Length: 326
Ligand code: CP
Image (tube, rainbow, N blue to C red; front, side, top):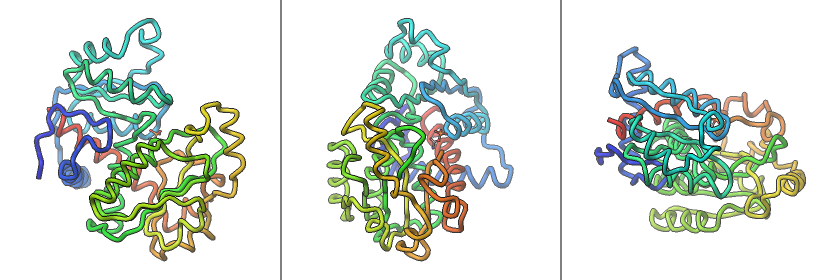
């Protein structure tokens, strides 16, 4: 068990080794149990987290804020537009200065080709660890919560379990590609056979798909890319279907919406779920476009684990903060 994570950043999913992720999960389950029985666990008393948001959030903001309070510390919510970032504070200033005020800096910056570079710029200048609350490339805490949830539902040995990471249609906005990218990087390390499905125009970053293939080779698991949603669902143990924008094809939102609207049949419904294993679970990080990305019948049905998945954000984030911010 690797336990010394003090001061470490978590920006990319692979920043923590497999053993370090296992340490996070072990502590997350312990903290989940402590919360269930009302046992106080103030591991970060008098510690502070600065949470800098360039993009909206429900789950991420609330779970980090609640988590810091439950650990005995405080989280400060900072919206970028209420700061002096627009008037000249660079990533270096934010890292240098917030790193002196806070014991950790958590950032959500999803702008395409900007977010990840910004987080790394802050991390270079910061003496406090930087935690990625979602950027344009990765969403590591969502992925840790997903892994914890899959293990709770399917057991800790996930070898030979089939995970489908599928694109789904949405009409609300062009969603980031960070969730599927994190999933295909992290899950092969835990033995899952990954099927990635998307219409041709919705490919992920080539270097991420290549790294996912390399992880699958290293851990002896399967990795395939298909372009048919129903085919992908066949015999799946875990169906993880969500929308993302065609960012590698176009970063023009109007052209992106046109491409998206061509694939309205990529909806998770009861018919497609019947192709998966009878005990398959349905996952989504939320928010979902109800009855567009996924039918309410599936999202509210017995195979859906979306609320347990959302809850586990709290536990994995508390575990990571407790390990990195003391
Ligand atoms: N899944 C997720 O990150 O939710 P929010 O965008 O509401 O934080």
